[in-house]
Length: 211
Figure 1 (cartoon, rainbow, N blue to C red):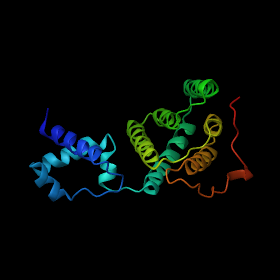
Figure 2: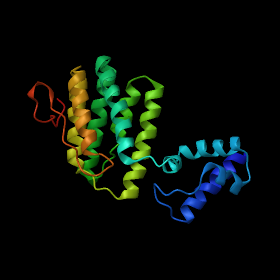
Figure 3: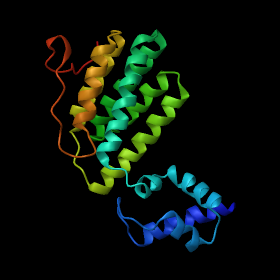
């Protein structure tokens, strides 16, 4: 095992053992380098390794609202990109996902809040966007779990996903962007819902089904 991996494991064990919460400051870079007896390069590599598990988020004291803003900026771009380049194969994949999501909710009442978002990022055919959305949704899940935030009902989330998909399939990038914006505001990791942006074309709410 590389030295950076050992240090990363030690830091993670310390955080878990002392039950530190997001936002707790556990030392400056200089202090931690001295504590673990490693070079700055090794320490920074250890932090990069921890980034995958979200520990780096806590170290940098990223606030939930900042994470929400990052997701919004990237994901609205994703839906516009997919809507502009949607193919029959991608339409079929989106429909299959929504069918499976609806069946899962009907059977067990459970849902995955983020799988739909990761799917859309993958369908952009841009690996960087896919990676960014995967990372941001993982960090969002960590923060929501840490703060014990309540979430929307499974049926409401599925209806929002279906409305976004409907706009994408119709190649309406502006509508897809609007519906994704409202959806992300409603499931914000900060808890309270933000006032929705004004919908385009006088729309009142997204449709809940895909024809």
